[in-house]
Image 1 (cartoon, rainbow, N blue to C red):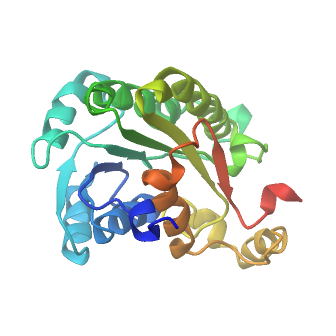
Image 2 (cartoon, helix red, strand yellow; image 1 turned 60 degrees about the vertical axis):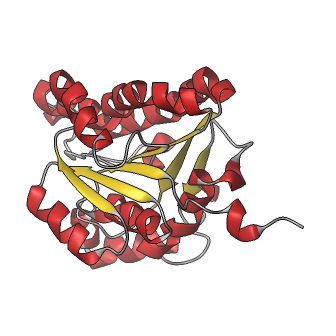
Length: 253
């Protein structure tokens, strides 16, 4: 019989989580730390990262930085690897949704959305992969979306970036899986976070979104824990290039 604890263990691993200051990124960073990983949380807001550290049990380190700053990415990686060494696990949870309608999209909003949501996960992974390749083991987890597969009003830039995440997940898996580095994505449905505050501020819309799931409710932060630990642990050794929809069955209907 398998050792279930070892199968889903991240104990002793080093993880980097972007977007760790709030929402699902914060939850991911906390879950990994409390499951025994040494976690480096990355986000732009130093005060929010400090609050995450205070609230989280385990070995943690906060790095304030902008993953969309291509010119500063090498320096950011140096800060990420300094406290615990090179990460075995990287979770790309940083994200932006400008919610601009197609007719109102600006070049600046478009570029910023794609830089954070799509370009940063690739270029940060590219810099972290060599150490994973040397050890023969690594886990890359990206964040997809309902808009990876569905079109929503006011989401053309965000939807384009998240559609790209679906293909990026497959392409990175094809490139690096043979070296023991798997790449998968989690596609959250409607979870109440800072990013989705405009959605949840409307009670009717909140209820309508819940009704469109198979389960009949919107997501709770703890719903992320199981899929995340699965994708970051030996339990997912033969899973790569996949997007797991964490949406209560929203995309199944």
